[in-house]
Length: 320
Image (tube, rainbow, N blue to C red; front, side, top):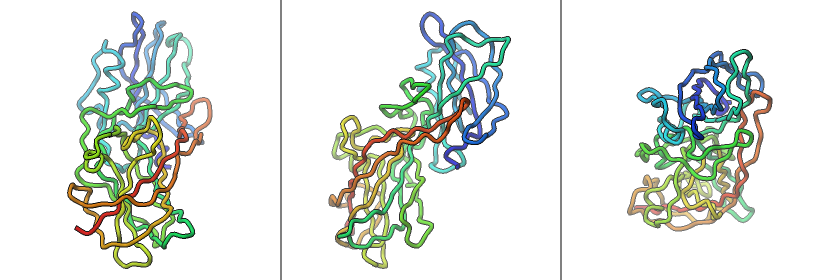
Protein backbone atom coordinates (compact mmCIF):
# COMPACT_ATOMS: atom_id res chain seq x y z
CA UNK A 1 0.00 0.00 0.00
CA UNK A 2 1.13 3.58 -0.59
CA UNK A 3 1.04 4.42 3.10
CA UNK A 4 3.56 1.61 3.74
CA UNK A 5 5.89 2.60 0.93
CA UNK A 6 9.45 3.71 1.72
CA UNK A 7 11.02 5.07 -1.44
CA UNK A 8 13.95 7.01 0.01
CA UNK A 9 15.92 6.77 3.23
CA UNK A 10 18.50 8.95 4.93
CA UNK A 11 20.38 7.88 8.06
CA UNK A 12 21.57 10.56 10.49
CA UNK A 13 24.39 9.26 12.67
CA UNK A 14 24.92 10.49 16.24
CA UNK A 15 27.76 9.53 18.56
CA UNK A 16 27.66 9.74 22.33
CA UNK A 17 30.31 12.13 23.62
CA UNK A 18 30.51 13.27 27.25
CA UNK A 19 27.14 11.76 28.03
CA UNK A 20 25.15 13.24 25.14
CA UNK A 21 24.52 12.34 21.52
CA UNK A 22 25.96 14.74 18.96
CA UNK A 23 25.49 14.72 15.22
CA UNK A 24 28.36 13.37 13.07
CA UNK A 25 27.20 12.77 9.47
CA UNK A 26 24.44 11.37 7.29
CA UNK A 27 24.34 8.51 4.81
CA UNK A 28 21.83 7.55 2.15
CA UNK A 29 20.03 4.22 2.22
CA UNK A 30 20.91 2.14 -0.83
CA UNK A 31 19.24 -0.79 -2.58
CA UNK A 32 15.90 -0.16 -0.90
CA UNK A 33 13.49 -3.00 -1.48
CA UNK A 34 10.28 -4.32 -0.03
CA UNK A 35 10.48 -7.99 0.93
CA UNK A 36 7.12 -9.31 2.04
CA UNK A 37 6.04 -7.18 4.97
CA UNK A 38 9.44 -5.55 5.51
CA UNK A 39 11.55 -2.92 3.80
CA UNK A 40 15.28 -3.53 3.63
CA UNK A 41 18.20 -1.31 2.63
CA UNK A 42 21.95 -0.97 3.08
CA UNK A 43 24.02 2.03 4.15
CA UNK A 44 27.73 2.73 4.47
CA UNK A 45 28.56 3.92 7.99
CA UNK A 46 31.86 4.63 9.70
CA UNK A 47 33.05 2.32 12.46
CA UNK A 48 33.35 3.64 16.01
CA UNK A 49 33.67 2.08 19.49
CA UNK A 50 31.48 4.79 20.98
CA UNK A 51 27.73 4.33 21.50
CA UNK A 52 25.77 5.39 18.43
CA UNK A 53 22.22 6.52 17.75
CA UNK A 54 20.82 6.25 14.24
CA UNK A 55 17.88 8.43 13.20
CA UNK A 56 16.16 7.26 10.03
CA UNK A 57 14.22 9.68 7.84
CA UNK A 58 12.08 7.96 5.22
CA UNK A 59 10.28 9.71 2.35
CA UNK A 60 11.87 12.95 3.52
CA UNK A 61 10.98 15.01 0.43
CA UNK A 62 12.53 18.49 0.50
CA UNK A 63 13.74 18.27 4.13
CA UNK A 64 17.42 18.39 3.18
CA UNK A 65 17.17 20.50 0.04
CA UNK A 66 18.46 23.59 1.85
CA UNK A 67 19.45 22.14 5.20
CA UNK A 68 22.26 20.01 6.60
CA UNK A 69 22.95 19.63 10.33
CA UNK A 70 26.23 21.03 11.60
CA UNK A 71 28.57 18.34 12.98
CA UNK A 72 28.71 18.52 16.76
CA UNK A 73 25.18 19.83 17.41
CA UNK A 74 22.98 17.92 19.82
CA UNK A 75 20.21 15.59 18.75
CA UNK A 76 17.55 17.88 20.25
CA UNK A 77 18.57 20.57 17.73
CA UNK A 78 18.43 18.21 14.75
CA UNK A 79 15.03 16.87 15.77
CA UNK A 80 13.42 20.29 15.52
CA UNK A 81 15.35 21.41 12.43
CA UNK A 82 14.35 18.63 10.02
CA UNK A 83 11.00 19.31 8.36
CA UNK A 84 9.47 18.75 4.94
CA UNK A 85 6.51 20.03 2.95
CA UNK A 86 3.40 17.87 3.03
CA UNK A 87 0.60 18.56 0.55
CA UNK A 88 -1.58 15.73 1.87
CA UNK A 89 -1.09 13.54 -1.16
CA UNK A 90 1.83 11.73 -2.75
CA UNK A 91 3.44 8.37 -3.20
CA UNK A 92 4.98 8.07 0.25
CA UNK A 93 4.32 9.37 3.74
CA UNK A 94 7.22 10.90 5.69
CA UNK A 95 8.47 8.41 8.29
CA UNK A 96 10.88 8.30 11.20
CA UNK A 97 12.62 5.68 13.29
CA UNK A 98 15.56 5.55 15.66
CA UNK A 99 17.79 2.94 17.26
CA UNK A 100 20.56 3.10 19.85
CA UNK A 101 23.63 0.91 19.46
CA UNK A 102 25.55 0.92 22.79
CA UNK A 103 28.43 -1.18 21.44
CA UNK A 104 29.08 1.18 18.53
CA UNK A 105 29.62 0.14 14.92
CA UNK A 106 32.06 -2.65 14.18
CA UNK A 107 34.39 -2.53 11.18
CA UNK A 108 35.01 -6.27 10.79
CA UNK A 109 31.42 -7.50 10.67
CA UNK A 110 28.08 -6.64 9.14
CA UNK A 111 25.96 -4.47 11.40
CA UNK A 112 22.32 -5.43 10.97
CA UNK A 113 19.44 -3.83 12.87
CA UNK A 114 15.66 -3.91 12.92
CA UNK A 115 14.00 -0.50 13.15
CA UNK A 116 10.32 0.22 13.70
CA UNK A 117 9.13 3.31 11.87
CA UNK A 118 6.48 5.87 12.73
CA UNK A 119 4.62 7.75 10.05
CA UNK A 120 5.07 11.46 10.71
CA UNK A 121 1.39 12.13 9.87
CA UNK A 122 -1.99 10.84 11.02
CA UNK A 123 -4.57 9.01 8.96
CA UNK A 124 -8.21 10.14 9.05
CA UNK A 125 -11.18 8.00 7.98
CA UNK A 126 -14.85 9.00 7.91
CA UNK A 127 -17.34 6.14 8.08
CA UNK A 128 -21.11 6.05 7.86
CA UNK A 129 -22.56 3.81 10.55
CA UNK A 130 -26.06 5.19 11.04
CA UNK A 131 -28.29 4.29 13.97
CA UNK A 132 -31.69 2.80 13.19
CA UNK A 133 -33.49 6.08 13.97
CA UNK A 134 -31.28 8.23 11.74
CA UNK A 135 -32.51 9.70 8.49
CA UNK A 136 -30.62 8.54 5.35
CA UNK A 137 -27.34 10.26 4.56
CA UNK A 138 -25.01 9.79 1.57
CA UNK A 139 -21.40 10.99 1.82
CA UNK A 140 -20.28 13.12 -1.12
CA UNK A 141 -16.90 14.50 -0.01
CA UNK A 142 -14.58 15.21 2.90
CA UNK A 143 -12.49 18.36 3.16
CA UNK A 144 -9.55 18.83 5.50
CA UNK A 145 -9.34 22.48 6.55
CA UNK A 146 -6.30 24.29 7.90
CA UNK A 147 -3.83 21.41 8.10
CA UNK A 148 -0.23 22.38 8.74
CA UNK A 149 1.65 22.53 5.44
CA UNK A 150 4.91 21.12 6.80
CA UNK A 151 5.86 18.12 8.90
CA UNK A 152 8.60 17.77 11.49
CA UNK A 153 10.02 14.38 10.58
CA UNK A 154 11.48 13.48 13.99
CA UNK A 155 9.32 13.91 17.10
CA UNK A 156 10.59 16.14 19.88
CA UNK A 157 10.60 13.20 22.25
CA UNK A 158 12.78 10.13 21.83
CA UNK A 159 10.77 7.03 20.94
CA UNK A 160 11.32 3.43 21.87
CA UNK A 161 13.01 1.28 19.28
CA UNK A 162 10.78 -1.67 20.19
CA UNK A 163 7.39 0.02 20.56
CA UNK A 164 7.57 3.56 19.14
CA UNK A 165 4.77 5.86 20.19
CA UNK A 166 4.38 9.60 20.80
CA UNK A 167 2.46 11.26 23.61
CA UNK A 168 2.40 14.82 22.26
CA UNK A 169 2.52 16.49 18.85
CA UNK A 170 5.72 17.91 17.37
CA UNK A 171 4.73 20.75 15.05
CA UNK A 172 7.46 22.05 12.75
CA UNK A 173 8.28 25.63 13.66
CA UNK A 174 8.06 26.83 10.03
CA UNK A 175 4.68 25.20 9.43
CA UNK A 176 1.70 27.35 8.46
CA UNK A 177 -1.98 26.55 8.19
CA UNK A 178 -2.88 25.74 4.60
CA UNK A 179 -5.18 28.34 3.06
CA UNK A 180 -6.82 25.91 0.64
CA UNK A 181 -8.57 22.80 2.00
CA UNK A 182 -7.66 19.33 0.85
CA UNK A 183 -10.75 17.83 -0.78
CA UNK A 184 -11.31 14.10 -1.12
CA UNK A 185 -14.33 13.23 -3.26
CA UNK A 186 -16.16 9.95 -2.81
CA UNK A 187 -15.37 7.52 -5.62
CA UNK A 188 -18.67 5.65 -5.32
CA UNK A 189 -22.28 6.81 -5.65
CA UNK A 190 -23.19 5.79 -2.09
CA UNK A 191 -19.98 5.04 -0.19
CA UNK A 192 -19.87 3.59 3.29
CA UNK A 193 -16.71 5.57 3.99
CA UNK A 194 -14.13 8.01 2.71
CA UNK A 195 -10.70 6.88 3.93
CA UNK A 196 -7.02 7.57 3.62
CA UNK A 197 -6.93 11.30 4.39
CA UNK A 198 -3.56 12.27 5.87
CA UNK A 199 -3.00 15.15 8.28
CA UNK A 200 0.18 16.55 9.87
CA UNK A 201 0.36 16.80 13.64
CA UNK A 202 -1.37 19.73 15.31
CA UNK A 203 -1.36 21.22 18.80
CA UNK A 204 -4.44 21.28 20.99
CA UNK A 205 -6.30 24.54 21.61
CA UNK A 206 -8.30 25.81 24.60
CA UNK A 207 -9.38 29.25 23.33
CA UNK A 208 -12.98 28.89 22.02
CA UNK A 209 -12.43 31.53 19.33
CA UNK A 210 -9.33 29.76 18.02
CA UNK A 211 -11.10 26.41 18.23
CA UNK A 212 -13.69 27.76 15.80
CA UNK A 213 -11.45 29.58 13.33
CA UNK A 214 -7.88 28.34 13.82
CA UNK A 215 -7.76 24.57 14.31
CA UNK A 216 -7.52 21.77 11.78
CA UNK A 217 -10.94 20.24 11.15
CA UNK A 218 -12.99 18.25 8.66
CA UNK A 219 -16.05 19.28 6.70
CA UNK A 220 -18.16 16.34 5.56
CA UNK A 221 -20.40 17.01 2.58
CA UNK A 222 -23.34 14.79 1.82
CA UNK A 223 -26.95 14.38 0.82
CA UNK A 224 -29.48 14.26 3.65
CA UNK A 225 -32.66 12.23 3.22
CA UNK A 226 -32.46 11.98 -0.59
CA UNK A 227 -32.02 15.72 -1.09
CA UNK A 228 -30.42 16.83 -4.38
CA UNK A 229 -28.21 19.56 -2.88
CA UNK A 230 -25.44 18.64 -0.43
CA UNK A 231 -25.27 19.83 3.17
CA UNK A 232 -21.99 20.32 5.01
CA UNK A 233 -21.08 19.30 8.54
CA UNK A 234 -18.00 20.33 10.48
CA UNK A 235 -16.16 17.59 12.38
CA UNK A 236 -13.56 18.47 15.04
CA UNK A 237 -10.71 16.47 16.53
CA UNK A 238 -12.24 16.42 19.99
CA UNK A 239 -11.96 13.10 21.79
CA UNK A 240 -12.73 14.44 25.26
CA UNK A 241 -9.98 12.20 26.67
CA UNK A 242 -7.58 13.61 29.24
CA UNK A 243 -4.26 14.46 27.65
CA UNK A 244 -5.81 14.77 24.19
CA UNK A 245 -7.17 18.33 23.99
CA UNK A 246 -9.45 19.81 21.35
CA UNK A 247 -7.71 20.03 17.98
CA UNK A 248 -4.76 17.81 18.82
CA UNK A 249 -3.52 15.45 16.09
CA UNK A 250 -0.78 12.88 16.73
CA UNK A 251 1.48 11.18 14.22
CA UNK A 252 0.96 7.54 13.30
CA UNK A 253 -2.56 7.58 14.75
CA UNK A 254 -5.63 6.60 12.80
CA UNK A 255 -8.63 8.78 13.56
CA UNK A 256 -11.95 7.14 12.66
CA UNK A 257 -15.01 9.38 12.73
CA UNK A 258 -18.23 7.39 12.53
CA UNK A 259 -21.42 9.19 11.53
CA UNK A 260 -24.11 7.78 13.82
CA UNK A 261 -27.06 10.05 13.20
CA UNK A 262 -27.98 12.93 10.92
CA UNK A 263 -31.03 15.01 11.85
CA UNK A 264 -32.62 18.08 10.32
CA UNK A 265 -31.93 19.87 7.07
CA UNK A 266 -31.11 23.45 6.28
CA UNK A 267 -29.89 24.97 3.07
CA UNK A 268 -26.19 24.84 3.70
CA UNK A 269 -22.91 25.68 2.13
CA UNK A 270 -19.30 24.73 2.63
CA UNK A 271 -18.01 28.12 3.64
CA UNK A 272 -14.39 27.26 4.28
CA UNK A 273 -14.63 27.47 8.09
CA UNK A 274 -14.10 31.22 7.94
CA UNK A 275 -15.28 33.46 10.81
CA UNK A 276 -18.89 34.64 10.72
CA UNK A 277 -20.58 31.39 9.72
CA UNK A 278 -23.22 30.33 12.20
CA UNK A 279 -23.18 26.76 13.38
CA UNK A 280 -24.88 24.48 15.82
CA UNK A 281 -23.57 21.46 17.65
CA UNK A 282 -24.93 18.25 16.21
CA UNK A 283 -25.03 14.58 17.15
CA UNK A 284 -22.03 12.72 18.38
CA UNK A 285 -20.66 9.32 17.58
CA UNK A 286 -17.77 7.28 18.88
CA UNK A 287 -14.82 6.08 16.85
CA UNK A 288 -11.35 4.90 17.69
CA UNK A 289 -7.81 4.24 16.69
CA UNK A 290 -6.93 0.67 15.84
CA UNK A 291 -3.97 -1.18 17.31
CA UNK A 292 -2.42 -3.20 14.51
CA UNK A 293 1.02 -4.61 13.89
CA UNK A 294 1.40 -4.72 10.14
CA UNK A 295 5.12 -5.09 9.60
CA UNK A 296 6.87 -8.09 11.14
CA UNK A 297 10.35 -9.49 10.87
CA UNK A 298 13.87 -8.82 12.10
CA UNK A 299 14.69 -6.04 9.65
CA UNK A 300 11.24 -4.61 9.84
CA UNK A 301 9.42 -1.32 9.77
CA UNK A 302 6.27 -1.68 11.78
CA UNK A 303 3.33 0.66 12.06
CA UNK A 304 1.62 0.94 15.42
CA UNK A 305 -1.79 2.54 15.97
CA UNK A 306 -2.32 2.86 19.75
CA UNK A 307 -5.98 2.49 20.59
CA UNK A 308 -7.65 5.67 21.83
CA UNK A 309 -11.39 6.42 21.76
CA UNK A 310 -12.29 9.41 19.58
CA UNK A 311 -15.55 11.33 19.94
CA UNK A 312 -17.15 12.93 16.92
CA UNK A 313 -18.31 16.53 17.21
CA UNK A 314 -20.38 17.83 14.30
CA UNK A 315 -21.11 21.43 13.44
CA UNK A 316 -23.63 22.06 10.72
CA UNK A 317 -23.35 25.20 8.63
CA UNK A 318 -26.38 27.34 8.05
CA UNK A 319 -26.98 29.30 4.91
CA UNK A 320 -25.08 32.59 5.03
